[in-house]
Length: 91
Image 1 (cartoon, rainbow, N blue to C red):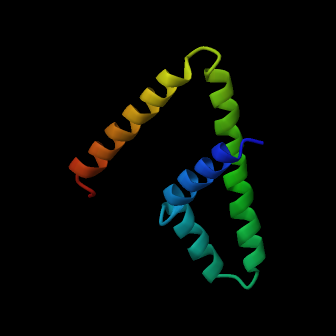
Image 2: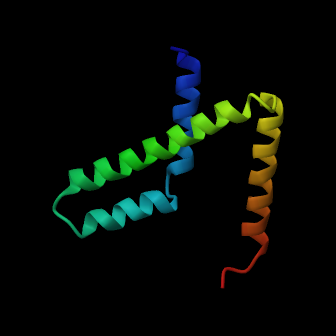
């Protein structure tokens, strides 16, 4: 186990997930039920499933593209999405 990778992945995903639509969906779902554990388990399993898909896809893509290019493409995509969110109207 690479503890440095584990810690940096946890930190990045934890910070990225704070206040996003997934967290807000879990918050709103938990307000309408007395079964808070069901909401927790459902949202935790969903995050695990989407993370597993991302890890598998990353493993497959890394066979074709070097990791440096993968990081550049991901960074560029984040910049483009950020610019779109910043400069487009929310109507």
